[in-house]
Length: 174
Image 1 (tube, helix red, strand yellow):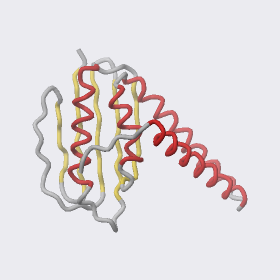
Image 2 (image 1 turned 135 degrees about the horizontal axis):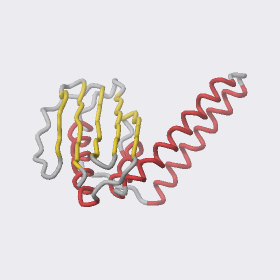
Image 3 (image 1 turned 30 degrees about the vertical axis):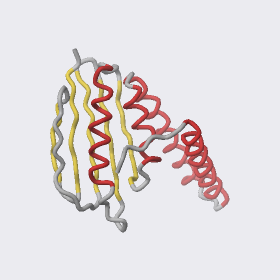
């Protein structure tokens, strides 16, 4: 599989589609008298917007774009982003972070079991002393172990099986 990129038009179309789906879901719940469910959806959307805003503080344009568009480029994943960014990251690492993330996704994507849900949670922590990104994919796929040489990034794999792949990218801030 090759790297997928999106045009501005495609991004706007996907964003508009998601927005309309969210509005329809809220309206449906309100029509059914399920006010608490509608409120939960609004809270989830609000948290998602806060997370997307927070990751912009990384000052890593390519990484931020990758994170914001992964759900549209790889729709087989149910993506959850979590972030606590208080300091930007050295921009020289931007391309390396994206390259590693993209290669890991491509490694499993064509081999995903189509009858299994695939949940990808990406947790980002960035402060004055360190950048830490945790990639946690749960689902089912059939592929060999991922091996990729990395320079200038510290990658720690916690688990890599055909059911879960969890690793962390770490960068010491200078």
